[in-house]
Image (tube, rainbow, N blue to C red; front, side, top):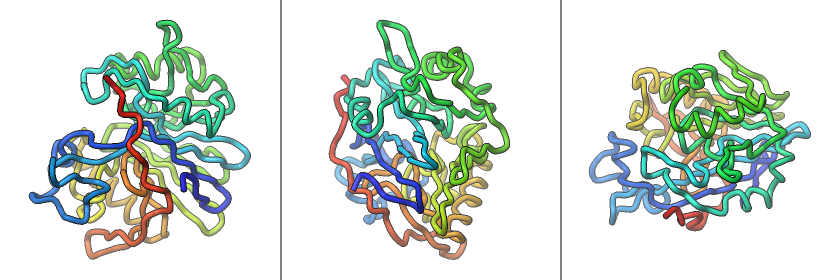
Length: 289
């Protein structure tokens, strides 16, 4: 399935690209050698050492509104990191089959990295314009300040800011009765998680707090992109601990396979108990030459 329900909230997964993004240990250096066999095939390719992952957007239908969590890489980008440069995929067409961009009410950027804000804007005859012209874009103020003047901010944040569509928040932000943002710094200064509570059901969208399921079993293991390693570890332990206590479905930004997971305490670490019912994606959006 591409869609599941958490209480009264419908969650749909729209994948921009799925496949090997590069060596697993380039992204998560603390994964042991050899990598645990259980990571294959959905999260690791033992033959190449590659990390199998997805760039994707989560579409939430909550309280009569449509909320997007992260917007992927985007097309036509000039990037210092070649992994995210020059993509040309049909993501926007696939997203439009789920929701008309004009009908999106809220866009959540869990943080301002290239693979989380790209489709905030689209290229219209050489000008970056908002992809979701009627949405409120929610961006943590600390990330806005930290990334101001970078290539990512210039083409994916500044145009929506100039259009008056951005709300900068700091300590927390309630979207509706079901959805609330909270700060979880470390990966970036303004990294955030989105908590979903509907009836007895719970979920938490954790952005890049996790790149690989291995980090569930070793929560002190950071990605190479965590700007403040100690703070990233503290945020991960806090959020995963609450997820285990409250039976929250953990929804990271990049997991391949079924994409989201339930966890339990396992001493000072955590263990995976159940994967969500999202179908593993096919190989999508790989034309980025």
